[in-house]
Picture (cartoon, rainbow, N blue to C red):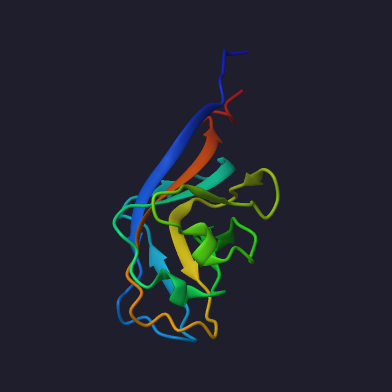
Length: 141
């Protein structure tokens, strides 16, 4: 048996809400190109940290935000964006289950659900950190 370690890793990306995003519009935003979580990873946490100033963030109201790897939903579906994306404060999203096994690798995607919130004029830029465990030769025996 080889000496194997689960190595904690963090995928990092940045995303911006499009300025033309308006009420009742769902937005699926890719984090920075190449932000990939491999098959077999175990996701242990999701964190946001807004970078630049947020403009009209209160217009997000109760619009929700979630994170996916490909089509796999990582967070609970009820994280209010105006609470998760607060200027100069980090925030997290609860995982849908703890921990989450990634059965098919994919890019990190940020999804803002449609809602009655008037997102017109909202300008936000945020960093996202997805923490996971991964051992690339875990199936080698």
